[in-house]
Picture 1 (cartoon, rainbow, N blue to C red):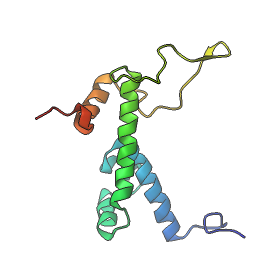
Picture 2: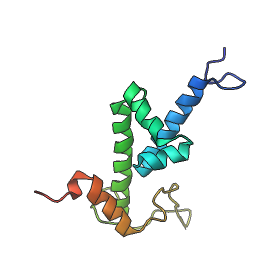
Picture 3: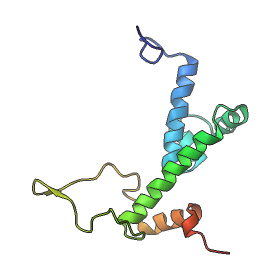
Length: 130
């Protein structure tokens, strides 16, 4: 028995909207910018605000996407040794005589200055105390 997700043939408008929503949340978790994420998904950024107003995108979904973004930024800071990480080895991991490559990194070409600016703008532990 085929489910809606595995059914052959053209997708319905609701299936397309769900796919675009998932893609939007993925790109929002990478860029933390509504306009950039909307552009990557092929929708206008006003559609995002329409979905928020109608309740199609919930606060919880947006919060989860933001948390993924924050985790990515914290991971980059750990890799750059700006944050101590007791589980991060000081030496590269070597397997079969080769240095293990990491998974594709969304901040691969980002400068460390840019990552520090992201941290200062979004992470509470990098906010100046008032």
